[in-house]
Length: 430
Ligand SMILES: [Zn+2]
Image 1 (spheres, rainbow, N blue to C red):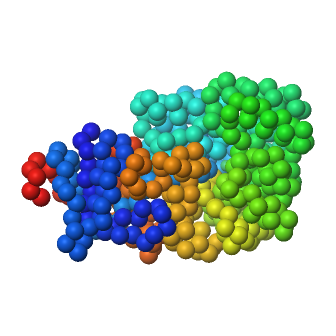
Image 2: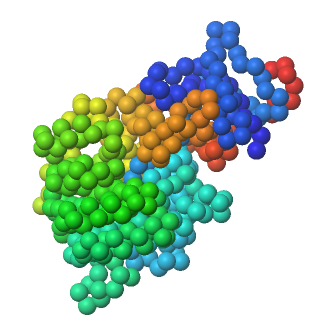
Image 3: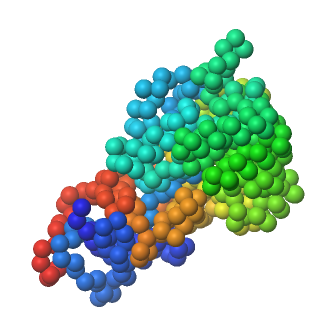
């Protein structure tokens, strides 16, 4: 892969500063140089590099999805997701992984897989180049309790093969389960601390004893693994802080004490509310029998209101909120993930700058790559997007694949910009 010089780009560098006109030189998989240009200034041409004239297009860091389920297969229920046979399921995940990259998500944090090894296999295949996809952190299945969120077995068919989640009861079963997933090679353990109304267990209910939770965290940390929790209820959020569960998904129901706790520990946790799930389940799932009347009765409308109030409060308190909305259900199809940024702006009150930072600079530490990812800065990894339009003026341009002119991951184009703007520099005179 030849080195690449982007010229005349409007650079959003992920620092929080307003964009400026400049050139970005990518050498190998790194950003080697960022130069401000304009007003007579131009960067030195680079021999042998492919020059991409951005012609004023918006150049930004690749985006980070904080709550990704490649193995959710755009179906309307946990059962329907889980029952896809393993062979088809692997192919599905591979195809979805590429779709994320297509839409500008160059990094994704796995938030649970529908079968024990799906996430690990896909992560490994991306890393060794067998398939195309974003940087990926692999998750376990959702760990749950008998009868809890993710236990989709039938009373007469209690076999784990029928379960969406990994079902444990008691500390020793939890310990064994964590060790099993560590053996498979996951990066994180996903534990369902609260319910989920669509499955019959309300979101404001909590499952698991504290002993089981403590065992999960203790065992995961002993192996150097992260724990992520499905935590909608107020009680479950507090347990995340108390036990040092780094990733808190949803965090819908809070009281003053919980908000104080999250604020006091804001550098130790990542919050991804998954608003797309709440919004679309509440109002856009009628086709699948979930009319607004039905979902109101289930409690989703009340939860959406609570979640929006929580996110507004957390934003005011300087807690970082990340995009990732449980995409992969019938009414939240994969690839529409940038909707989350629109929700952040329109419903949580973020500025477009904050929304862009949440998808870039704030997501990088969640990938455990805070010093190498999420910014357009010398020495950082070259995960870059070229956008036709200005996301700071209209955040929705990121939802349109046609407006994402180029996607570069690790210094290589997944999608190169339109040909007419690229040429190879063969002479020094530009
Ligand atoms: Zn999820």
